[in-house]
Length: 411
Image (cartoon, rainbow, N blue to C red; front, top):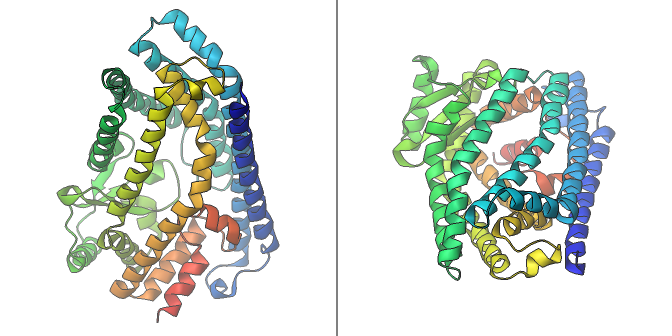
């Protein structure tokens, strides 16, 4: 391994160390505030509930800390030790050409996923189970794994063959064609995922006729939102956490409520949650996120073009110059950069959440929104006292106390 390869491995380790430091700050701050409910929530959140939320946050953060160290260690091991021997094994089994490159990527991906499964199992059957959220069975877990793997293979196999083929056919411009194809697929997935892929894992049923549906439809009409229906997802099959979302474009847009959300919230709270989601639509946040993804993807494909154009990058790690090897190595090496980008992306996401909150306030009033946020926090055991630096770095949504304070200040 060259000096540049060693520096990249060091950057991965330093990135993990930063993640551990930020998580330790989060744990310390939650512990320091464990015995006092913030004044704005003292009436609605019991001290016992606050304690339980703190314990859950601490446990989740410690788990995430261990996972961060584990993943960084695996990335360094892949780059420094494992990729070369794995490629040598694949080279013995598969003739040179497109299939060898594809086979290496698939083999590396399969091994990586197998190494991730212990943490996935521990998350569901130890952490989430311990706090009463897990409703998965082992059978459902492994069926989901098989479905996800089959889906990844069905989508990834033709994409890999297509990318490596066009790399050989148009070595100087391939990345532009690949980028356009990637973005077309990304946009198509906003329609394909809710209508084709999501039903492979969950059951979606139309919201029953009645007062609730009439109330939601009146809100949609008031906001000028056209969709192909209101749906309820059987999220309770896997978790007790509650949520709602909308997805898709044009006539394919759909509103989805978790059944766990409908079970625990009042009609006024559900209306405010839907109004918040409609705020994302009204301000074009989905389109903005796609544009953001397009910019990041363009930079990613440009770097990939450079890495494919010469053997320099692969040589940093003493690896053979093969497209499959280069692709996997680059995916591993980019982690420190994406980690440092996270605060900027999280800041933009939080700004969108504030806009959606304000939209909901103007449509249905601030009290239902405050009530919904408080109940979501209580039911999901979200901490009311996150570390400010940790929150700025990682939170895609503003901390609930900040959101509530902003709603109250708006009048």
